[in-house]
Length: 544
Image 1 (cartoon, rainbow, N blue to C red):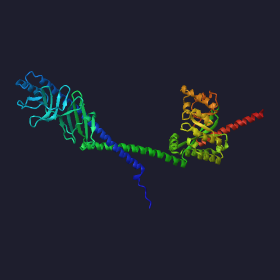
Image 2 (image 1 turned 45 degrees about the vertical axis):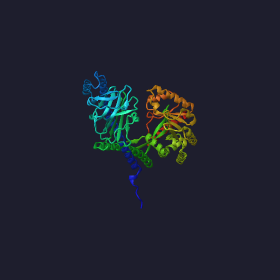
Image 3 (image 1 turned 90 degrees about the horizontal axis):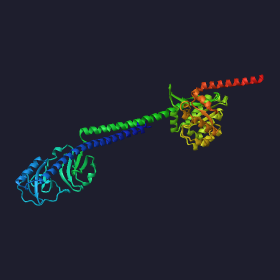
């Protein structure tokens, strides 16, 4: 039993599936990146608000300390306590002011009768101006806590609820005071919120603005204000579980998959189009669908027909032609260009074989490619075809287009062998392609064909036209014949005739590409004219 190949595991299907998966993964990563960028933007806004609020609080504490130390009254006297209470009422989130003598707490605005206290302990942070800061910790009053900022004979207790109004869901933050070197820190306030992990103090982390947790669930932003000495560590729990977050993630995946699928379909379209073109070309060649047109090549001086150039035409639908530049170039890439050359040769023999056998002086040129020059099999095949058809090699000229990237150093052997067989070799589209002018002397070709791009400029662009005499002069130095392509107006023909150099030409001015019947009729007409001329000459000679 023979099994049919499962189309679901074909390479094309696998490529499309891979593009969909890669697109979905890329979409998810891009979506995650965009969500983090959006979160960072929100954190920047929140951080700015926290920093401004902290700066206002510490500024109030410093101003209050300055005023407390400047009290005009005896420390802890009734007048001094009344003075200090006014400062508390006017201050921002300060709940008590303590008075000290020799670093011992004597009294405060809330506690007038204090037992003798020991000298204050070493503060968490000491600034160069004498200010000291204690982290948020338990106070003398049972059940109370708060950070302390002091200087001189006074200190202030900051409210433990000062930042409560700054709470926001999914965010946690810690406010620290630090010294000038950022070596010591005092925690002023901590809010863990509903974050899965609250901010942690690490002096090495302050150099990094945004830090993402290894699990990717928490994003932390660190910021220090050098003017106020306030450092803030802000954490955000990245929302991945809410309905909105899931929908955004799904949308990113779908858009990524759509983009990946589009790339895959684009690749498939061009692949199929490319393969379809080659498939249809091979099928058309096998069915003999492409046909040849024959454009006359004439003597520029008198318009005498010297021969033709065979041009392949492929009509895939009525009036719809595939340009030769397209399918020949694709055939070269696929390595089947020689198949086209052989087809043209065999079609030429079929169309014009009788005419060539009757007119041994007639030459028809065909185009060859760089790969043909390096193919001994092609040369042998062409030699056999011509011998079988009883057509002389010199009757079939070979045109190598300069638009093709040819390794002219390797082409020399092929050109030599073809010339030894009797073929004339032309460099087609001369002046527009890859070859160096220096190669002309080494290639030993027979003629060049000046590209129609130069011919079109006659009468329009004299800067470009001036190149034509140089090309002609160079060709003459190498003993090469010259064919001018694309002559379409009388002005162009007149220009080249005035150069005073024997030239051949082809173009619509001398004749458009002809079908087989018209080309044969043209040859017959020329033959009749030549016969009449010969007869007239004989009659004249007899009369004499």
